[in-house]
Length: 334
Ligand code: GLY
Image (cartoon, rainbow, N blue to C red; front, side):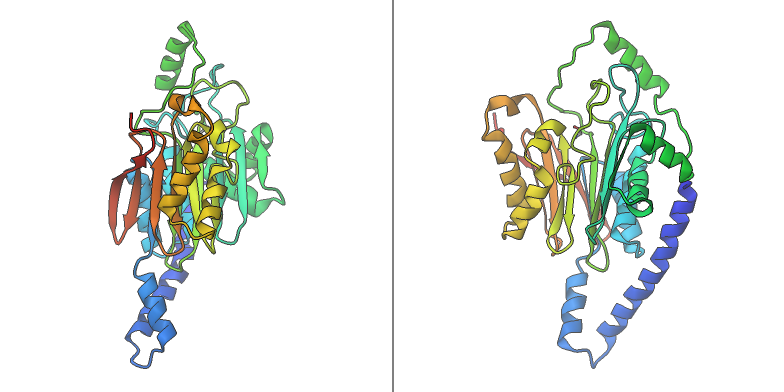
């Protein structure tokens, strides 16, 4: 699928939803409205909401604006994260991402919908919009995950265009790295990394997307948490959703995003649930001193939270037309 066709499709979806909102407003103005209608209108005044990891303001604004026009949660999340997939200056997501140690840019992504369906692609080369590709796996195949060449070939059959993901700038930096190649993942103190996004739409439905080029100069074939449902992303539309960023191996070991949603199911706020998921990692041993992990979460009521191991993590929240960058609280105060 070409991106312009996708945008056209989601816009058409939006028309129906805008009509749906107009009907909600009519209910509000109707003097004979019953108690249930009143509660629904009040609840929905908080919506829509889009949140995403790090300071990806443009991506989050795009998702928030799409939601405000009535686009459903999953399509809005994909519209949002695709901004970073196409941003050549972003060296951790999509085109322009840092390659593996052999100079190949390989991308991972997943999506999860409000009805519990999900799709993922891992280790994909030559395709920029891998979150959209993950959605196509979800909707156009009987499978959840497609890997590597299989995912790439599927993409071409779906109409995606082949693209060289290694930019001249990324190539130069990789060539410098090759002069004294050290494979030592460091604490991520940059202001960007994986983009994970959660959207709560006008109907109160939650969905999310997560997309990354993974660890810089990773081993060939390495896959992190971002495309793993339950680790990099999890959504249960009855409860809420969570996404992760940072050292993927450690997120996978604790199935972080699923854990957060389950903690919210047991009554924790998104904030407390993110804190507990980080503590599951930091309680194990001192290794957390050498890497960063951060979570963001949203519940069905639209409350959001975030927590990271180290200082420096921020996330974006779009609500009521306002797109804010929020500094996360963190564990390691040293
Ligand atoms: N969280 C991104 C990765 O570890 O690949």
